[in-house]
Length: 254
Image 1: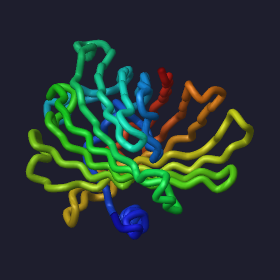
Image 2 (image 1 turned 90 degrees about the vertical axis):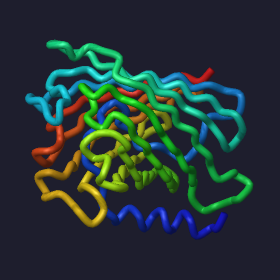
Image 3 (image 1 turned 120 degrees about the vertical axis):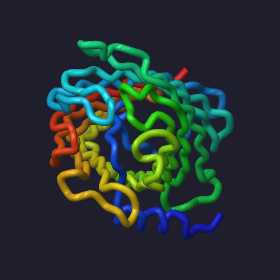
């Protein structure tokens, strides 16, 4: 693999993103994979405090809904892992249900390559019920680039999405940049910002109010190598974006 790949991925950050908000796993990924022979169990939990109040494309509104996602990831080698997601929704008026599942293999650039940045590539494929996601069968290709400078950490996920069933099935590939920057204020606590965006299909971008732009103020806690915690409050800046979301991610390695 060429060492120019990380720099190409960095350039993708300045491109444009995706339509269709997915709040089942709100996370900017780091490049490291789960260690060989170990398993990570995570709970992605979020609550939409101010979201969509009416159905769209047959999809139920997400106002005052809890999304609870279980993620199980196993490390097969020092550079390859596989994750499996179980999506769930909890809400009134028929919005409590199992939503769907995805599988996510990921490979990383081995440490012995000694690249100046961390790099990995994740692919995620699966099914969601139409009532909860109008695009029921989707593929996500997520390049991951990150770097730590002393107390400052930056991660970029220039994601490419494709729908195979639903309103976006003929839209082609859609680009979705997720970006994170954080700063260690102690050995345990890091504070930062996370950005999630969506502007529509390549070369056929939506108007600004139909795009999605969401910013989270977030914190990470690293009090143990076996545990992880991420929590934050997000605000959406356009009509197509949920206005207020609270999220928590708790993970444990075994």
